[in-house]
Image (cartoon, rainbow, N blue to C red):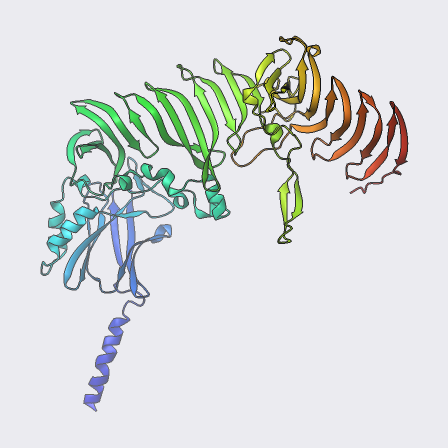
Length: 582
């Protein structure tokens, strides 16, 4: 009976030990990372099972915060846990001695997001830890201690005391500012397509992740050059590497550059990189093309920027954006030698210049829309794919027949008339008339965001014609001869946009033909906001003659008939129309 009792008791004791910590493989440890006269930073270190592995978790119960420091396989046993202030910042690092297959290893974890003021610490909403020792130091140390018998916290501290200066052994703060999801949070994006529409992809910014691009994970192979305040400079013989030593023991790679350092003088001469820009210096002066990023408050995004320098002076800046995973130019700004804006060009998605703003002494002088008249309406028509039968929506295209024109090639004929000209592909002369968006008005609701509405110009007319004299002094010096289009301007001059084409205020409202200055053939009038046909008339030598049609706004025929040598004959007229009221 006694034998049976002992046989049963032994496995029960063993099972009790296995379940001693529940889902944990080690007892919870209360740790005090910092303490002064005013406050303490306390936490709990846990080792919780996670399938066939376990998570090393640190919690701050008072703040209801926790983070996973590490995930390890079950074969890695925990031998000892201790605290040690490696970087002498008064906050202790957590060190754990592990043993796997009878080989020791030591891992440290540092608190990375507590800011130390004069007498206080302020925590963020999450706990940010990083592994204390950099890869090279960790590998060397673990190789040294792996076979030491009875390796314990006391022996480990002696090894850590030899790791000086601390900034050569602690891990880099490898926080990648270009990690989109960490920076703004995944919930900020509606979809993956939205992310790629305005954001950047890795090949755009790989040179801005300095540590990864230059493969700098240890200072062991770099030569110490000098200290500059809280920074330290090293070199590999080709580049200089400037590191910032942070208050919490973090070391961050801030700049990489070529040049010379003699005494207190630093001469940047050659390639230069930091986390926001890269380019070339010529004796401490920026030169050539620089790639950089600027933050857009409107889009809450970093946008790629190209800057052009001559002898240290910025002469041009191009802002780009991504659409369908391709980069497009949004705007190009030119500067004078005083760093004053001279001109800003805005571009359509196809690369065509849409608008040009010109400045004088940094004051806006004139804004001209060049391609807004080609933009689609903000109306979407339902169409059917004839092959598949599927329905889809497509923006209603502009009615203009002059889409192939590049108005930047125009020649100024008369500044007072805002009249320009250019040659067509068949060598005929085309005339373009620009008009102010709000002629004679100094203010108008809808353009209150603009400096001066009288400075904004758009297309009023485009037509084929013949000049009576080489120098055009008035419209009388032009004979309209050929196709003609008139445009609506309204009161809003349009805008440039990264997120999509804005509403097109320059829409075709009249089309027809002239023959030696007189209307000829079919002339049509269109609704300015939708492009729907409003009316159609026929002319013979400038006189109404022939059939005509007039339509309601819903497209239904309102009236038709004909003109006979200018006299109107109504053949059919719709009855009264009643529109529902809501």
